[in-house]
Image (cartoon, rainbow, N blue to C red; front, side, top):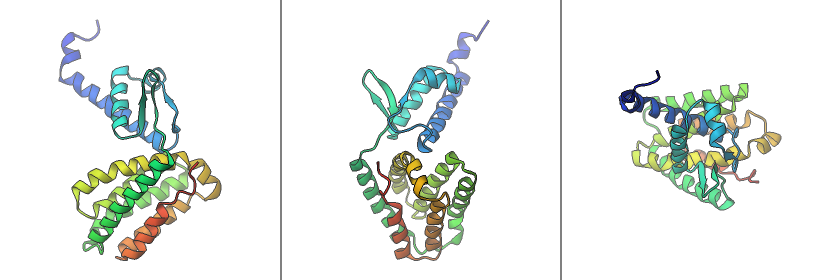
Length: 223
């Protein structure tokens, strides 16, 4: 006869609902940051609930949380859509990232304990594997983890709290330009850029690291 009322209000139901929200957030974020969902694309609740196999309540909460991260825009009477970044948005985000990463370089290099580089190296290997197999979702995830691992070398928790949302939003810019960049660069170019960056960090060369980070700020493919 269906669920008892206690089943719909008790702790198990709450855990199930929270899990569905988290799964929806992760799936939507990955699809947005890999370019599967394009900037400006409408996020139709009916389609998403059917595709994810969930109800509207956890989906709406997921969209709300993604709105807080700057990946989703909520429009009055028109629902939600994938966020779009203007040229000004991109310039401002890159300038903030540059300031924070310069602080990381000045604070963390040279790295005293080489074991601190393990996460950075592991994410680089994940990025290379994903690029080789053409797995866009995995490559986007590895790219995010690489830059967060780089920032984590500073051992500064408050910096990470500011830095992570900036990197997430910049991945919107990169996702919007995946196709255009693919026409002019080979799949391994991004991996090679990050490998040069890793090698400069491992060698404790601040100026070389900053030079590579400057290349990461290229706006060559802005539409």
